[in-house]
Image 1 (cartoon, rainbow, N blue to C red):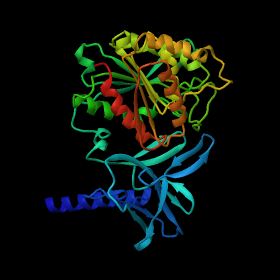
Image 2: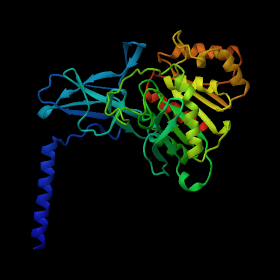
Image 3: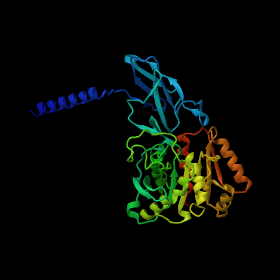
Image 4: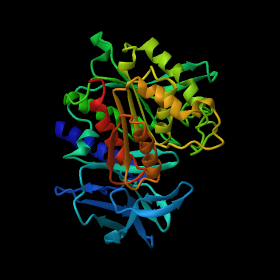
Length: 397
C-alpha cells in the first residue's frame, strides 16, 4: 500500500512539473554553461530563425557613434544552429574572472536569454548576467561571509519640496554593535537611480567581501538618486510604472548639489554615524563623479575622501548655477583643507578620458595632491565595479 501511495505521489508531482513546463514554455537548455576551463557556451532555441547572435561585454568591443561621441560597445558573435533548432556559441578562449552581461540578437531583434533568469536593468536596457569565479568575480559573488543589510528608505528633502528614496547598505553587525560608522555616499551616472549601484555595481557583495577579508573598514554606503525631478527609481514612486529615460531635467544644473545636505541630515539623524569630515566620503561614476566633484568643493568641510570614477568634468555655458562658478577658487579652499584622499580613475578608451586629462593638468598646475588610476576599457560597469573595489579599502584608515 505504501508503495502504491508513493507511486501516485510521484506521478502527481511529475504531472504538475510537466504541466508547469508546458504552461510557461520552459526548456531544459543550459545557457550560459560555464565549463571547468572557464570557456562558456550560450544556447538559444529558435528553430525558425535565420540568424542568432550573442552580444556582450565578454566579446571584443566595437566603435559606435553616439550623442556623446564615439564609444566602445559590446561586440557580437554568431551562434551556429545545431540539432532541433538549438543555436550554440562557445567562447574560443577561457574568460577571466568577472561579472559579464549579454543578450541575444535573433533575426535583428535584441532579446534576453529565456534560460537565464538573472537580469540587470541599465536605464532602458535589460541584459542577462553571469559570473566567472576565481578572481575579481569572487568579489561580486555572495560568499560564506557575514552579510550586511540593504534598505530602501524615504527621506524628506525640504530643498526639493518632496519625499525621496535612497538605498542604504549597513555592514554586518550594525544592528547590534552600538558602534558609530563612517559613511560613503555613492552616486550613480546619467540614466541611473538609487538602484544602479546596488544592482549593477554589486555594492553589497563588494563591501561584504572586502570587510570580511579585512581589506575595508566597516562602513555605511548611501546610494542616492541624482535625478532631482524623480522621487525614486522608475516604478518605485507615485508616478507608477514609467519607462526609464536617459536624460531628465535639472540633472546637472546645481540643484542636486544644493539639496545634498538634506541627504546627510537624514542619514545622520537616523543612523549611528561619525558626524565629522573624517567619517564621510563621496564618490560617483560619470554624472555621479561630476556631482561628487562639485558637492565636495561646495561643502569643503564635509568630506575627507573624494572619488571620481570616469567623471564628467566640464561645465557648459548653460550651466550657470553658482554651484559651478569660480571653480578654481572653490578648489583652492577645498585643497587648503587637505582632504585625505582625492582619487581619480578612468579607462583608456573612455569618451571622457581627455576631460580627465585636462582636469588633472589643472590640479597639477596648482600642486593639489591626488591619486590616479587608469584602467583598460571605456565607460562601463566592469570598470566602475573595479574602481569601487579599489577605492573602498583606502577609506577611513
